[in-house]
Amino acid sequence: MQKVLFVRPITISFREGLFLLVLIFIMNIYLLLIFLQVVVSLSHIIVRATVQSIDPNIVSLLRLGIATIVFAVWQYPKRAEFMAIERADYKHFILLGIFNLVGQMLFIGGLRYTIPPNAALLYALTPAVVFCMSALLFGERGSRLKIMGLAIAFLGAGLVLFDRGADLRAEYFIGNIMEAGGMLMWSCFTIASRRLVAKYNPFTTTAVAMFVSFALLLVVFPFIPTTTSFTDITLTQWGGISYIAIGATVVSFSLYNYALSRLEASKVTVFNNLQPILTTLFTIAVFGQYPSELFVIGGIIALVGVVVTQRG
Image 1 (cartoon, helix red, strand yellow):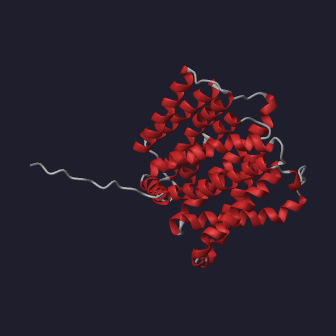
Image 2 (cartoon, one colour):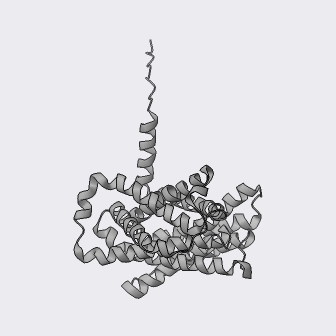
Image 3 (tube, one colour):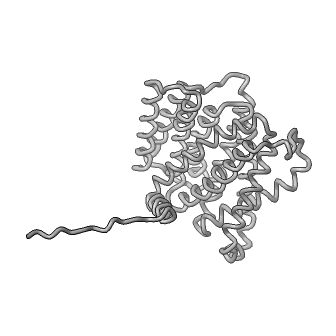
């Protein structure tokens, strides 16, 4: 007579499920990078909506302030790592903080004068800029396959954006210039982070950069004109600011530096080419528009470019 086996169903709590999900992302660096681009792409739209009614400088101050508090609480148990930072590296962390501060203020301020697809297009240039900087500063040489992958990815991103709203008209000129400056600062931040994340914990590196940026902003903020009072901010606007501070700053910067500690800078930044696609996709969802054939083709080309770069 055949025996019937009863298998007890496996049940896990929400906390255990969340832990397993995070573990899967950490174990697969590429899934983590895709998740990172989703978070950042959403921030383009949320920042744009937020700065239409709140002074960008106030948003920058609150973003860094909230992020600094979160990092302080998060990293407090590991405060010994901060004390272990060598004095010779202080200047590198200060430089990292400056790049971060200027880049964030240009990114947030620029979205008041341009549209999210334009910003995403400019940030899609990050891999090429980082590659050129790495070649000039560190003599890093890229294979033909890597260079070809970067070019393919940017081509795909460009097709998507010019199909769905990338606008280079004069009315967006100031915003585009600010976003281009923010992209250059982000590229410098990436290069400056390479040495530090190789020497220190990537999360410690990110936290120190935020502390320095916030301290510098507090020094200069009294001299910056603003048009919004803190009491004028609504609950909905606080929600947007919270996402910008926690999702688009604490989470994204930490994951970004973690990825830099695992992969070459050019292989990390090439995923920025997914931002135009994702940003446009979210924009389509918000406005109820459907993707065209050119959008699909451009998205596939950009994804092929990411894969080719990783093979390089």
